[in-house]
Length: 473
Image 1 (tube, rainbow, N blue to C red):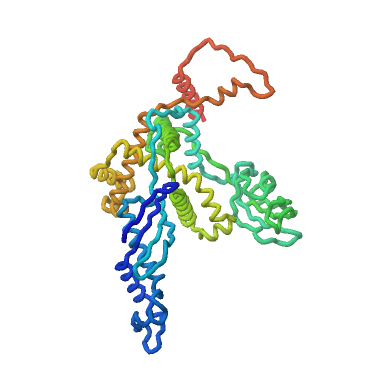
Image 2: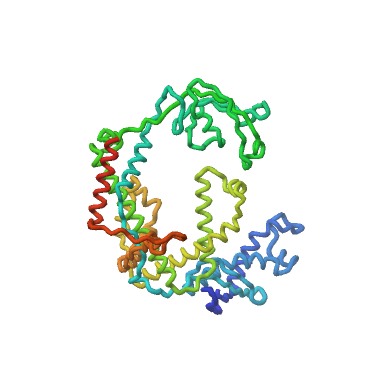
């Protein structure tokens, strides 16, 4: 094999002209003969036993050329790529050059390669970053979630009202006949949840345990075909009425739902956790905005193969998500009417952004001469083992050291961008709206205040008020 030429062409592609000489081609022809001879019948010889010379004499010396070219090409191509030290990122387009003879053949392979990247600005950038605030109302909302999870349903001897759960038997009739799917027994229905046919729950309100009633319903026009727009009658019996028993927000509640002895300590912990969550989200959004700028600032001729490969990766990830939900991919596509070609096309724009980001990160790592040591990789693997509660050796089976080092290098590159950046407070939309004024409304002067108070004082007062309100319930 010899490389006759190696030329750069548009969109980060390289055109290789490669010659396969007589010795390599002869070896490929012999392999082709060994592969094909069992399928060639020659009178006087058992299948697969006819000598190569006999077959070539009958069908011509070119009989094995096509298969021999297919055999010789991969090795010749890989050797040429290695010789030219190319970073290939896709499959080559191949065309023959001239005639193929016993002396060999020449082909041209045009292949996409890793592009040359010129970094733009990546230090000293700025981006908006939200200031993290946690108010008493935020803590109370989290407390409400805790109380909702610990709320019990208890049976009551009274008429059902909205918010209650009615345990019912029901059967639907269309023109005096039961219809499929219209029957249920001991069905728990939360009144006001709008989980049943429109108009049904409202008519259960006011019923007591043991009471029976006929409920007239007209199905919506957009309901499934058999019942769309039809008037039906549901025969309903209420077996039980249950109301929500909401736990009191006190120290005993804190002990029941957490490791804390007082409601005050529980609230403090909730505030800390919400603050950490929001700070993490703000930091991530800030980082994303900066890296988006870095990616946009690079100059590179990105080959289509890189974008298509990333789009294909997105599609493969989507298929895995569907499979994890227990739905066959083909069935899902048929159910939703989605088209794979359209999915790939839609994925190209985010794929291009991801490719630009990857190129930018690699360029920063090179520019800054960043390194990841074996010790750093080992420490990272230990952290992963602790995080996932796995044995260190087990983690090492799933992750190669080079993969871990890549993650470390990426973090270091991102840190260089973030640490040199400036966080800018976002413009307050509410303030802008007040400045512009609502359409059709006259602007009113702001009221003057005679007392100044710090933000911390205001938040403390708001939290104190919320605590007093919740503890007095």
